[in-house]
Image (cartoon, rainbow, N blue to C red; front, side):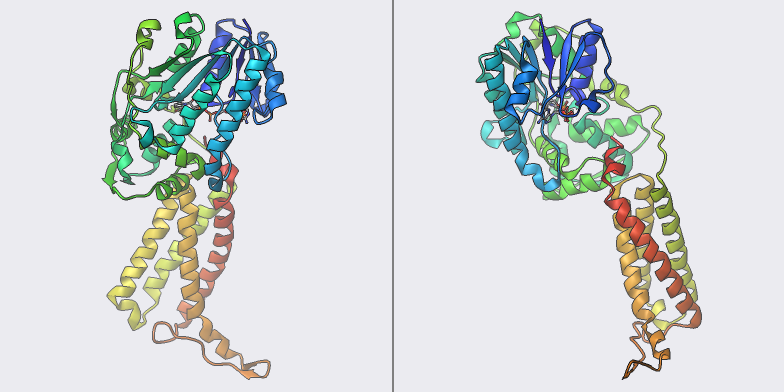
Length: 447
Ligand SMILES: NC(=O)c1ccc[n+]([C@@H]2O[C@H](COP(=O)([O-])OP(=O)(O)OC[C@H]3O[C@@H](n4cnc5c(N)ncnc54)[C@H](OP(=O)(O)O)[C@@H]3O)[C@@H](O)[C@H]2O)c1
């Protein structure tokens, strides 16, 4: 029996390959980048490089294969590309089904998404996972489809999104999808079903729902994870928060890109509870509950080194906040004493503080916030300093006016010196914040 595991570099694929090797089964594993399979070395292992978007490549990978695990999922690329996922997934599944027929593959085993609502109410993402299953069924191979809700375990997209949100946000403004009911399953239990189904003939040409013993709201799962990490989270549910806003928010707070966050979040809008339990009779395994699964997924030693960029940025933020506070003390102009000026200053300092917190949490939101604080201070200090040009007698043939006094009077010498130092710090800060914000590797490597 020759087995192919596609998506072998992915969350479920990696675990499945290791399990098959531990059981001494020969396996061929497939990826578009062989280096992503570097972690696997075994005498029973054969690695192939193939992009399933190319028919010939996938056909070559399937030659001589009896059973193929289909664990391919195209959630990658830029956020603007998220709409293309379904198209790509469709094409890839069609290639795979046709190539399986051509190569005489006997069986395809696939993990799709679990939803317990009518098709008409299904999110685009879930419809696409279902469509992939239907396309795979069109091959001459016998198919087994497992429908799973959130799979818990280190490295899983859904789990990592939740963990980072809980760990990084003490107060969460959430859309109403956090009230959606789920039936999560632990990764090892999914792998067990995938492996055991090889030997259970009755699983051929069938679709099964798989899930752990607990049904709970997404919000409850977040709270349970927070409790395990000694974090109490406050959740404020705002029903009208849009999908787009939520996915960009996830992108800014967690290492999960908006392109991946969008289908993940969209998937969570649909209730996912088992609608049938026939797998439990065919493959009886002791399933782990949510609490045990979360405990097993906790990162024990989650210390990380800050990069130079992150360190420079936090020093610059500290310097900027000190200059800002000094301004409040030194600048004695009447306008500075007004409640409105005081409120604006407090808001500015709060943005700086939040920026610093998120830089320390390694979230993109940090560089965005300090960028906003930097630009607004730069604008203010720059305009406040324009009177300095009046010290020039003229620029070319034109006489120079005295510049704008935004606070009614021109700043004192001390305030002007602070303005100039502040502007120099901001210039460097904005450059570092820009490169930190757009450093994709910095954030995706956290996953
Ligand atoms: N994770 C969950 O919580 C969860 C829940 C329910 C259902 N599922 C289902 O389980 C399956 C696997 O999920 P996962 O979380 O393990 O996915 P994943 O970690 O995102 O991995 C996806 C895999 O797809 C491969 N891939 C993507 N495009 C490819 C292409 N054109 N050609 C060849 N390989 C390609 C990637 O391999 P390379 O980049 O190395 O080529 C990668 O290993 C999916 O069908 C998913 O819907 C997952």
